Length: 301
Image (cartoon, rainbow, N blue to C red; front, side, top):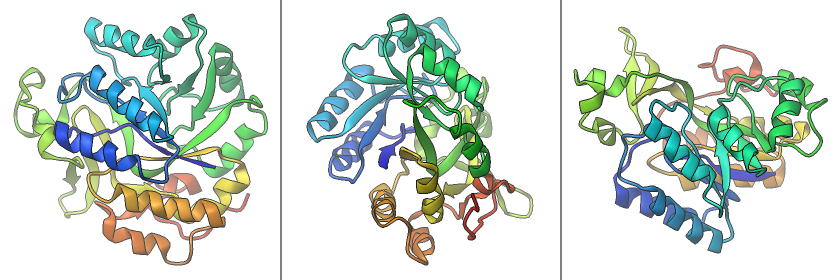
């Protein structure tokens, strides 16, 4: 089983991004997804910068993958997606079907991202026929549903599961961070950069409900399958995706690395990791329960 560092979902200052990926070269991660996957207005990093980071990580023994955005809103967004698809040097994760078709048109393999709505074996046969070599499982798919899909999936299609991080639940043409500051989207003043782990939205009772990240809506809690390693291994999952957070991502990766090597996280591992998370953990979707719940019992497969 491999560990992957998902694309950076937040807007960080340029130097913070460079420092983060410099540190990632020494982390126990096999695959690193790179690029802006959320909002084209974020301009701290350009494609040339991401390519430079990819080359450095490749020299460090990692497999870089360039991610495309999930929601394309303009002709310039499409043009940028095509530049990534035609980069000619690194693998690509298709964030939307436009990117998948752009890769297929070049007869190049690609990673099918988690937002492509691929929920059954027939859909996987189809996307594999277009050239997908890895499928990142939709976030809300349960362990038991995944077990059923895997029985009939294409043999050579790798399976990747989002295993840790705030879940990217939805994308919108509206920018919720700009709206929070009573700003129009086209004059957002890049306020996302003030919230390196997103902006928490709470209920009137003070309970975390959602996390706002520009045009992206995330879970308030941190989804984590650290305690579910036995089921992940039993299902034959090939890759676990860890989503970057502004602090302690290396500690998260170390915990998952230890669990994949031993076959299970030790008792209390998630609780010990909790101090390094920006919010309380959850894993409800994996168990077929409300997403914000934390289920400590293992899945019976």
